[in-house]
View 1 (cartoon, rainbow, N blue to C red):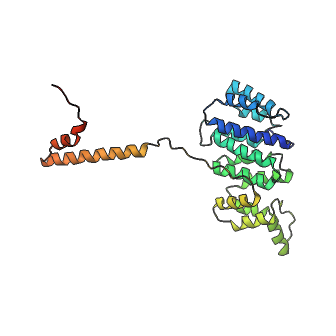
View 2 (cartoon, helix red, strand yellow):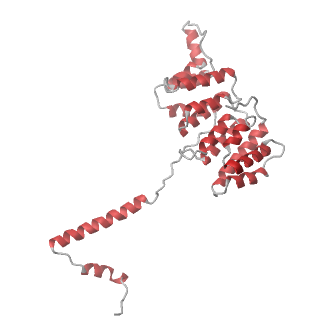
View 3 (cartoon, rainbow, N blue to C red):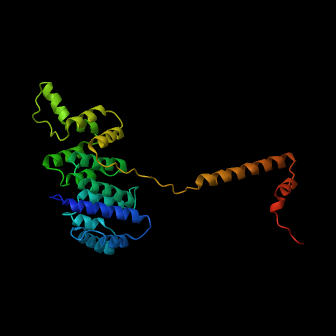
Amino acid sequence: MPRMTNMLEQAEYIEQGHLFQLLRERLADEMPMQELLRQARYELLATTKLPIAIDYLLTELKHSGLMSPAMYKLDHYFTPFQSYLIAQAEEETGQFTIAAALQVLEAEAKYRSGDGSSPQGLFFYHFEVLCRSRLNYDKGLTAISADPMYDMPWKKWILMLRAQIGLVETADLLFLASEDYRDRMIEAGESVEGKGPFLFGVREGKIAFGNRRQDPLFLFAAMQRHLGYPPVPRIQVLDENPDMIPQLSRRIERLEMRIKIMEEEKRGGLDITKFYEKHKDQMPDLDL
């Protein structure tokens, strides 16, 4: 998988956030992605590398109709996780839409451009995106590990998490990689040699320990408040048949009326003149 080796300048992330926001907002107008990218290109700073990247995306869109192949090739500019999200959104199956991917990428780029971004916050944001969007953990965590925000201990730990997830509770794995666990080992007189790496702080460790055997959503909510990473967008399942319930109600009413008519007819007491009386104002006059 392509790997970025260096972080981009702050201006690049600012413009990326602006691009993803423009695409997300204008996508609601059902305009083709090529036209959206072509328009957005002239609204970005020419001093950044993003307009050049957009030109490459446009070329790929014309040939294959997809953006993700070009993003994977531009591995010096787009992170593997960014490319992975777009690739998942371009799949014909699944609930992860291009609008959801753009919303995730917009928030991520704006978080990176701020002064409060951290490896811990970025990891939890990425990991929560995988969980809430029900994306593939193996491919997703592999892409996350290649992010330039993470040094070698982080990369190794994320790949270890990829192998352990589903076998060991996530909160336990986070706790074992925290300074809180290290301090408890030292206080108990035990050696920490061969343990770690201790990538999370004391408070993150306490949050993870307190959320063991609990719903992971509680863990994410606490970490989001503590680390200040962007809230992860919730997937909204669209109702393909919004009028189904009213239609069913009307059908049930008609069936009930038919049953009443059949019951009256069976008893020999059906008088259809009352229907004429009830609807006589709606009946047209016929001149015979």
